[in-house]
Length: 425
Image (cartoon, rainbow, N blue to C red; front, top):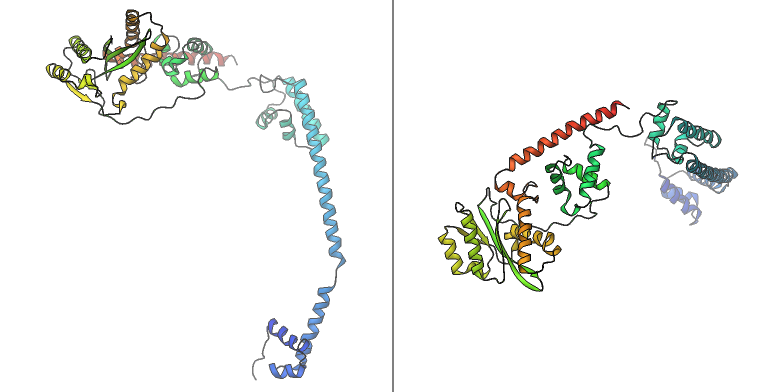
């Protein structure tokens, strides 16, 4: 006996479609598909019973949908009511804060004020059902502060800020830094930092000085963008290895004069200078000779641009007689002589453009005094904020050791000061 043949739902639908739509009799369909007519009758009965269930509308579905819409509308009304209550509670607490505890967040809170805030928050919590942390936020109390209040309930506040650390600047040091820097901010906070260390005003690190000036509103909002620099030849490792020489225009009493100088590349010290009425090569030759006479043991490399004064035969002969070496900067690349170019900028910014000369002799005398100040007292940012004279005379490590000692002594004094202050808390 063979296995009974099974038909898929698609096959059943196709057979019934031929009987119901195409007009075939059940016997014809049974003969065609080799099935019993009773089976086709059973399929047709099953089809009509399923169609009846398909078209029947259940009132329970409509009722459930209506109830769902109604519950959502009620939930929306409740949420709106909660929002209104929360807004009213926030307004009440904000008004209370302005009237009863305006000092919150700015000064130490007494136990009485803390208890007043806690009572008000708890009262509104019981009436509105809003969480106490939320209400505390409405009252201006951060979550962390509220939890701390609960941890030390009914205890007087001992300290309401950060406990002073032993390395903090003392109030006297902070006042001294602000007073010293107020009229000198054009020098920059790093220069001012080491000036104060050298002059025994206050011994603090550059970062500490910057933070004090920032809190006092004395720092610049925007930092000056640094010009992109190109790599040049190897930097000198000692004095008298590189001498930079160049001219620069100076306008005095409506006429142009020509400032020429020789700068030591290692110490940034001005070894010689002159204010000339013209740019003749003779002026450069005289300045090099005069500078070499002051330092006869020096055998530096002379670094200059490709100006006619420095490429002339007379100047090259002089360099050869003095047993020196000359190097020219790359054409259209003043950065190669950047140390002297930067000095010219500083010279004009800090002195020439702020001075009103009465004439050539007055200008020369006042320039001489400023260059003496530059060499001996002005702190230079590229040589550890020391003066060029300190570096030129080999006192770099001694001066840096003195500063470190002052910073260490000041740190020990701060430790003692804050230990005494904290002992009284």
